[in-house]
Length: 375
Ligand SMILES: Nc1ncnc2c1ncn2[C@@H]1O[C@H](COP(=O)(O)OP(=O)(O)OP(=O)(O)O)[C@@H](O)[C@H]1O
Ligand SMILES: [Mg+2]
Image 1 (cartoon, rainbow, N blue to C red):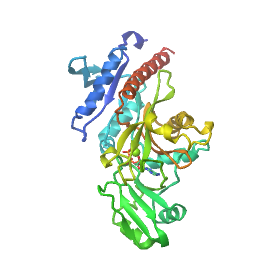
Image 2 (tube, rainbow, N blue to C red; image 1 turned 135 degrees about the vertical axis):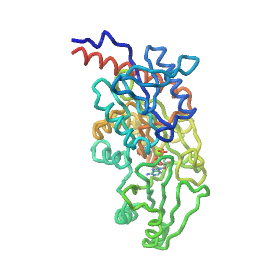
Image 3 (tube, rainbow, N blue to C red; image 1 turned 180 degrees about the vertical axis):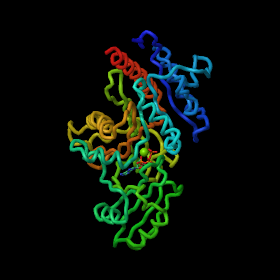
Image 4 (cartoon, rainbow, N blue to C red; image 1 turned 90 degrees about the vertical axis):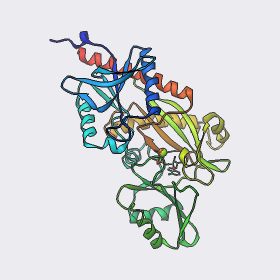
């Protein structure tokens, strides 16, 4: 029989990506990341290129893409990848029929390993974590938003957040506070000057929220954690986990994002700023009651359980993910969000570790493939 191994050049890794729409190219920032990853791969004998969905020739099993030779970009026809890393960064693009179909074909192709299969939905992530005994304590109480669940959650929690299931950068997030005498006020994350609108009672609140068109099953209502503060500003941790050269999940790095003054989300575009983990977190060590509850331990345990759980429960391949983690007044870490399209870190050493780990992981995956094909 035809022996694949003898004709083998590789490992070959393809990064599938697009610009904002299915047919546009991606911008400089992203290309930069690919350049670094491609260069890192070259040093280790891993050939990497990136490509757009429309440039796949399934019959000939060839793809037109872009690689980098250390000096310039090389546009060319490249062999079919052993591994496809999904870096389509727009939900609307990933959900288009054409792209969905392509991803499905890669998924079903025995000779290709597709990872970071797709975007995650906050509700499916919550359910996966919450229905598991070992991990349910790691997420804030959350319900699918309806008028009824809103009323229930406002009875249980003084403050709640309404979050779109499939948002990013805080877009669409609404915070509701209970004031005295069943008076409420709400504000939206994207409002530049934090402004709170009052509602004299529950009916009035619901009526006002109805105008935002959020009672459509695309929103969650979540207990708002009283996040720890630095200089009066809330902060959370942006952590990245990925698989290493043995296919095991490890913590790549973690940074701190501090919210703008008076803001309730930490995103940079919403006035947030970055800080180093080691500059901020040790200030809060007293919160974590004993050694078994140290932040180090909590992070470790999150990394040990969550990524694997999501892969199993959601039936998808993940090689890398990021998590937003908050710390409550009792020093408990809570997972606020899991993201399968992690943005790049600004800290150079974390970024480099991330590239090295990815290449290690590519080599690991290919070794596994050789073994499989040998049997
Ligand atoms: N349950 C919560 N309690 C308190 N603050 C929260 C909670 N959930 C989220 N936040 C704050 O709001 C921010 C945005 O929330 P989240 O990450 O869920 O939304 P997102 O719009 O998808 O963000 P991203 O751009 O990170 O994907 C968090 O980074 C955190 O600062
Ligand atoms: Mg987030």
